Amino acid sequence: MPSLVSAVPSEECESELQVPVIDLSSLKKGNDEAEATLAKVNKACQEWGCFLVVNHGIDKEIVADMDSATRETFKVSKENKEKIQGEFAYIPSMPALPFLEILPVNGAPDPRAIQKFAEQMWPQGNSKICKIIEKYSAGIEELTREITQVIMKSFGVSKYYEESQHWGLLRMNYCDVPPQARGGLGPHTDHNLITVMYQDNSGGLELKTKLGGKWVDLKPLPDSFVVFTGDSLKAWSNGFIHSGIHRVVMSNKSPRVSLPYFFFFRDDAVVEAPPEFVDDHHPRLYTPFRYGDYKAYCKQIKSARCEHKEFFERESDEAFLENFLGTSTGRGNL
Ligand SMILES: O=C(O)CCC(=O)C(=O)O
Ligand SMILES: [Fe+2]
Image 1 (cartoon, rainbow, N blue to C red):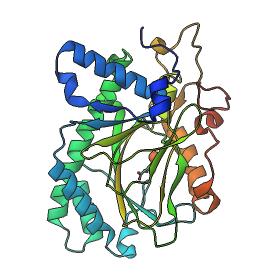
Image 2 (cartoon, rainbow, N blue to C red):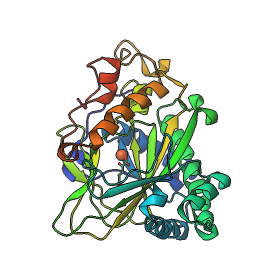
Image 3 (cartoon, rainbow, N blue to C red):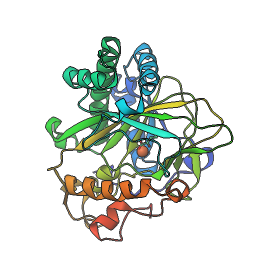
């Protein structure tokens, strides 16, 4: 399979330090253009674990409405936000998450789940915000599935994409840093397959380069979404796909909104690299594991760390996946 080329960052990436921008509309054009875009996606996954998408098909009005709806939602009382409980609960600002609040919209884009969410936030519900979240989350769900398939296609393994194996979670992030302070979200990788994220124009999002470990600004690009490939895809691709360390560092800015849509394996799915990723030169790096076990492992460690301030600043020198599996191997980012 031609895509199995070990990732060595090209000079172009090293010098310009610019995360690749993928024009999704080019995939629907002639074969040559589509092939070139797939090659770019493949390279971005191997070298960066991150890319931006443009011409993705989600109207900018829907995104702008969702940005406003998110700001409106965070204005509700803490008591109401705390009603969001369960596996994915409201997370108030914590010592390791200075000035960041996180609200999951569990069950979106299902309209009944969104209505339940709105009723928890506002006693009378909020049909306007429900409609906005419905439209946005349906769009981002479809886009995320499309991007997942494009990534798999770029590695020649799209036959393994199974609609029912995956699900998504929309989260609202709100970061309000007081004057003279510094805050955000500490360095981490995402544990899911991919994350497709809107960020407003505040800035502050950074990605660590795979080789060299330099922090690169993921500057807001109008009408784009940021895509991170996570630990699950790294394991599933036998280490070919990179899981990029990223963080948010902000000071002296007006409140920042971001909307990550996390795409997961189902808990009982077994994450196992298909044979296309394994050969004599690329032995199997990760023992197959049940995704739910890995998710629980990460959650336990992360929850404990939220209480400790040092985890905001601390460099993520730790590889969750390798520690979970008790291996010390990896391709490139350890
Ligand atoms: O808010 C951001 O820009 C990043 C969020 C993020 O990395 C996460 O929630 O995992
Ligand atoms: Fe993240």
